[in-house]
Length: 229
Image (tube, rainbow, N blue to C red; front, side):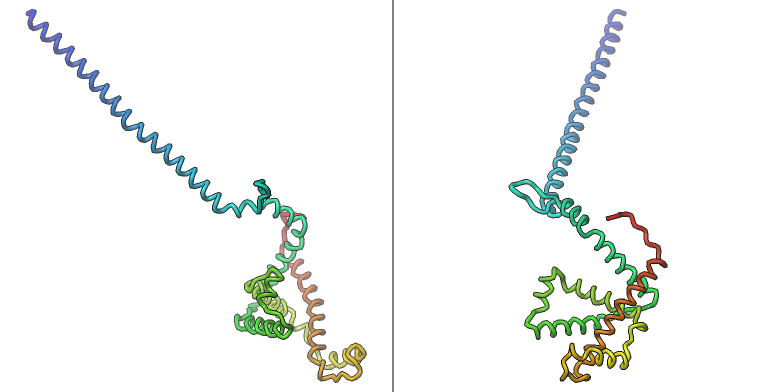
């Protein structure tokens, strides 16, 4: 009987020890698996920080306009100053552009690339006759070929919108010539300045009519200002 009790007791002790060993192994295994996971998260965070720093360095021109002895002049400072100086003018020009584009679209007016190409070629020839290169002229004005094309397209669309009101008759040209002979010179022939007068009169009419047209559009279209300069 004594022998049996001793065996039972020994059996219980072995079972308890096995349980403790098993728990210890689990804790040890948990430590081994969680520690690398923690280090991985740390490494990822560090890597992301490096990536962000790299992006900021490579794109520093997006945020910083210049530095003076290491002190940065931020682009937002430049933009804020530009808005103060010319924000109203730029905004109004943008509104005018949008009014013309929307009106032209509603009237199914369009300008072909070939028409713009011809205008650019005429400009190029006129500049070359005066000893100037088109590319150099664009650089001096801070413009690009693309911006020139956009401006010519917008101008032509505006002309189309009021074309029926800017026609210049032969009588108007002759009248202007007779009334301004002294400015042309007594020996100047009518045929020599006819096209020049026609272009000048048409330009004057265009300025008058496009201003009226845009005023009417402003009253017709809904324009909401979110910024006041």
